[in-house]
Length: 352
Image (cartoon, rainbow, N blue to C red; front, side, top):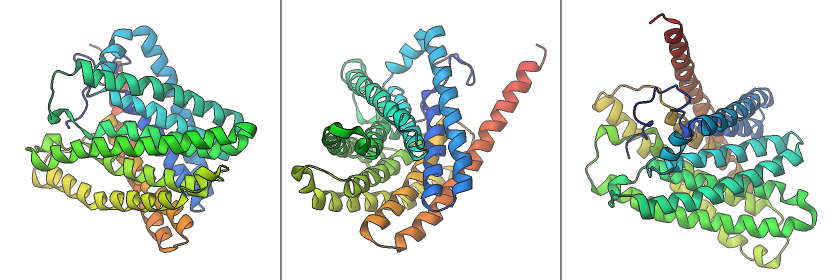
């Protein structure tokens, strides 16, 4: 469960050592933009949307350059069971950008984002499970960490964008609705598998302060995005009688997912207190810290969407509180990123 390492011997800010989890910056910024817009804070949401889209373009460009210039480093990442799941942040980030573009009326680009994300998801899913099956030498539950659940986040993000673009697909709308319902169920199955292994790891084996990583928050985020995806299916026009008949099931499971995510929020806060206050481990910026921001934003959005679906206004109060908590954490993490970039720039200008 320890923090996912950068390939050995590479500087943290070098192109060769670019962490794939940096796409969580896009996820975090984009989901906060969606949440702010949903709650009526349009101007701030527009600014956050711009940051998210620009960050996605920059990170995609840097990742392509890294692939061309340092294919060996990318190969090491993809064959590392502790690193490969971080690439699912690309899937989720692309879908979040698609949601932002769809909300801005860019329908064609939103559809393109879904298909790009779906292709990446297919390739990464089978690669990740192949790595776990054939290349993992540490065949015990100690290898499990919260980052594995980014695969669920990527899966459910396909549901969110797919349900949004389905009405724009004309005669293929029914096909997309079948697809997103299957993806939602598949995401739940993966979540059940991974969270069982994860809970066994943290509750029944020795836990050290260094094992507590921001990636732990993905456990809550995966539950929150599953709930959010469920509300998307509830609100969508299912078209097919077979899918309409599943609405009561989706209602119940969505509520369970939200309740499960809610349970994790205080638990994760306790983990953080134990690490940083009790054991006095200093908090330093690292790319995976964005994986703590995204779950907070997603929980805020899921609460608002569930409140709308259930016609239960008190959930809006929770959503408003959590979106500003997510925004505050975003500012802290962004300050850490800027400070790190400034330090790196100053060091690069210092004569050897």
